[in-house]
Length: 478
Ligand code: NAD
Image (cartoon, rainbow, N blue to C red; front, side, top):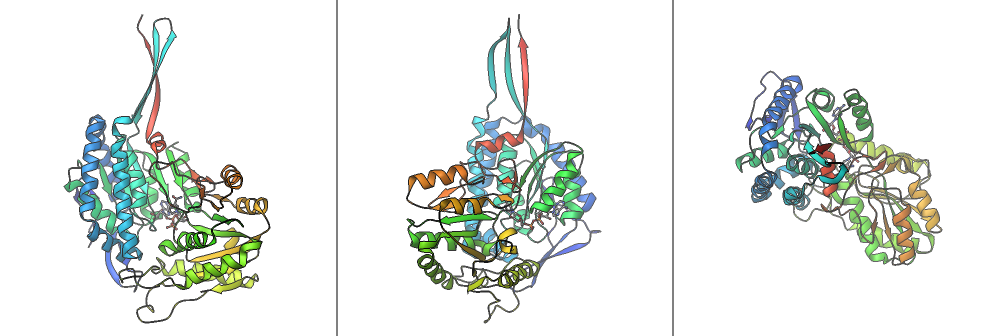
């Protein structure tokens, strides 16, 4: 039975209620973890607080070396970690291995920035006085992470938090705690000092909320749904805790009439169906110019029909199960609503049948044409393998409709026309715009949503700003 990882070791909570961890591919029980509650939260935050002083005072370059060594050790165990991630999350093994690699690369990126954490110097502030801009770590960071990319989204917080000298308590989703627990143990094996990175387990309302509101937690780094993000923001506002919110999205992809339709269709297929559509950054609404719509849709349907559904552990599978039965029920309700609104079903639209598919939470990759703009798939986030498509007459209409969303996470346009690409880059209301590409996130570039997709940035050197306090120092020497 898995247990939290606190103060450099696994700690059992025998009194706690157990939460089941199930395999989405066949609904079998894999393991269980305790509902940590107050005892685990207090122990984890105290451990992180105790470790903070020594970690903060460790030279930044040394912190970088330790983080790089820990990342390297995780990479050595990639195959074991990927198999565990596939079992608890459901994604194909190839995607799980990619996710572990991404986690490692993000830690290496921040390890590489260790010697570049900079403040400032302002000369001649006054007679015999200069100013300094000093940057200090915050203290204990709470990282609350969802189940769709349990390790990538952890790395986005762990890397910048640790390199800046903070310590961290992570609470993975209750359905995907196992890979995170294993990674914490591996990183300590490789030399991460005890207490610098702790992992507690439990549900959001019972354990996550206690962690976020714990008085010694200085910052909450949250990735998850917009409603939970809003609730947490209100709860921590009382203590004016720092907060980064990476929330839901409904990313548009615009396909113009001059686009390479074959490449755009491939991008739409990968952009929507990667991780069975359960990605924050994903092609969730598609707008195609009317004059090329039929040709484009024919190519996209052909690609979607070639996707191979099955358990993530099986070879050559491209589309695993949805992560939970509840998630699949929500997708089914959104598709039913779209069809009732008059949408045409182009492909998919039901559960697949066949050997090995009856116990898992599978759903066919689905394309819907022209649901009403008021349909749920147009207005809500669709967190599964369903893509609504609309025809548009030109770029102005495409951008207006793309921006007609409460979300502003990612966006993409497929065109060879420089003027169209530039116009879209300036006018799409989102934290990321891809031109002739989709959904590839780079450690070098800041990532974070506009509007109800959140605030604050992860990735890039910009993320460091969200793990440091800035202080002005006046030095009067005469
Ligand atoms: P969720 O908000 O339900 O849960 C996310 C995490 O928050 C989990 O660890 C959960 O246990 C915890 N949580 C839930 N309720 C809580 C509470 N009251 N207090 C404290 N913690 C609580 O999200 P989900 O549905 O599991 O994840 C999918 C959502 O995450 C989607 O909306 C997706 O777009 C979003 N997401 C955003 C990004 C991004 O970077 N913007 C990345 C991935 C996922």
